[in-house]
Amino acid sequence: MPLDYDRIKNWKFEDVRQAYAEKDCILYALGIGIGHDPLDTGQLHYVYEDRLKVFPTMAAVLGYPGFWMRDPDAGITWVKLVHGEQRMHFHRPFPACGEVVGRTRVTHVMDKGADKGAVVVVERTLFDTRETLLATVQQTTFCRADGGFGQSDQGPPALPKVPAVPAQRVCELPTLPQAALLYRLNADPNPLHVDPVVAQAAGYPKPILHGLCTYGVAAHAIVRALCDYDADRLAYLHARFSAPFYPGETLAVEMWSQDDGTVHFQAKAAERGTVVLSNGIAGIRQ
Image 1 (tube, rainbow, N blue to C red):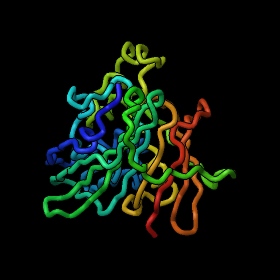
Image 2 (cartoon, rainbow, N blue to C red; image 1 turned 30 degrees about the vertical axis):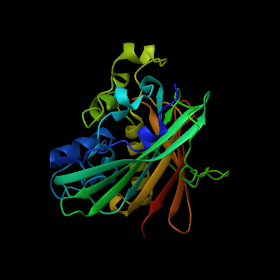
Image 3 (cartoon, rainbow, N blue to C red; image 1 turned 120 degrees about the vertical axis):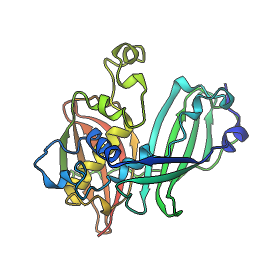
Image 4 (tube, helix red, strand yellow; image 1 turned 90 degrees about the vertical axis):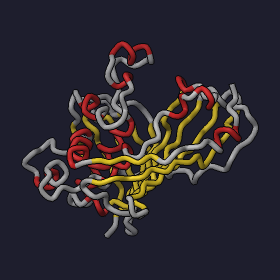
């Protein structure tokens, strides 16, 4: 049934304070495949406590307010939700341990029609305890069964398509068959990513990898190929989720670099040739 525009647009979120330690940063990096080559000193910076650096897409699992769309008061048909896009801006590096404060708000609610569903955009800003802004995380969710309420915001600017020419660079990163088992320890225990019975009931032949894990692997590829493993140079990373990706597959990230530091990208499941992340765009600091 249609969602209540005013209720969703004005949904009240409490601040989320989250302490994290070096172990959490290492676990996140391992979860997105960093450390696959333990002799690569570039990767080692993110998985070894000596001069540990935090990979910036860890912002995805910090200060998270929980699965609020499952709250009955939201009136959203949560079983039919689809994570559509993820956009992140990285303002300052995260310290290797500390505490963050996550502040969340609904920024856009768009009605696509009674037979097309709705789109809800949620923004989370992450601050340190001194109120320094560290990252901005924007998640777009397609509520496939909840359109037709008649009110609609103008959405964020559309993500651009990649250039219609061969990619300038391709970075292929293998993922572990147990990648979802690792990544779920960060924040997302959804059985869709673990339990074959649940996955098959949802229409998949086997458990799929978390979209945000695939997104993190793509960020890893860009940092590896274009930043010489200096992830502090990554200013932002936006992408659309196009198709499921399975643990154990190889993610092939195709990149087109522009003179202004912008990078267009898309990611494919190499073994199937299927685009799993599309309309990707990233910013690289010089």
